[in-house]
Image (cartoon, rainbow, N blue to C red):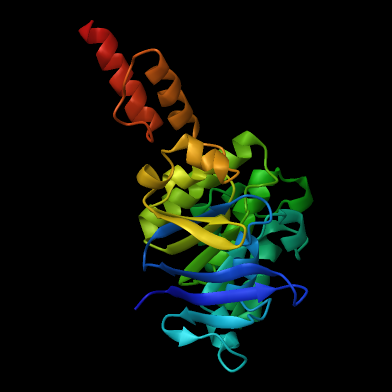
Length: 275
């Protein structure tokens, strides 16, 4: 049974033009899947439909084989944790500790158990020393770490990231991407990341590409993200490693691992050593 299964999904904000058009895809259990597309492609709308913030017009949304509906939405939402793009909009508490505790209180966790849970998840995201800090004094990357800790403390089966790094600087973006990859590796959690960051896509197991409301490509990043011309046509930038590999080809240097920057560097070093 798949954690997320979308079948022939359609949605329109104005009942005249669909922004999600006959979309179908599957997120496999334990996978780290990225959903990428240009601005306005419909990818963030998909996230809101999955957690029931928007109501679909046609199609099916199945979570662990259960159809999302008014009758099932409460139980389904307990299985899903979502982190949005602006961390400032997610804070409720006066301190980091209070903020992580908020979700636990909503889940009616016993107060005597909270401190251990809070400290465990703060440690998991590297924020233990900030538990008594005000969230407003944290960097963007630290705020997103706290938001992720708050979600993880409620033990969701599925983690959805909706443009969670789009408002961060390059350092904060890399920080969160590495954290998500680490969480996936250590916990085998099912992760769906809605993003426009092609470098994050390379860290995922599977990528789904949307264009003008439809899914146009679907598969491993090493296959989907290697055609620079096609990505440009879809209003996406190719990963830096792919662009570099293409420039090297123009110089008569061919590399095999054009989707893997570290592998490419190793390969180039070996080529230089063999000369």
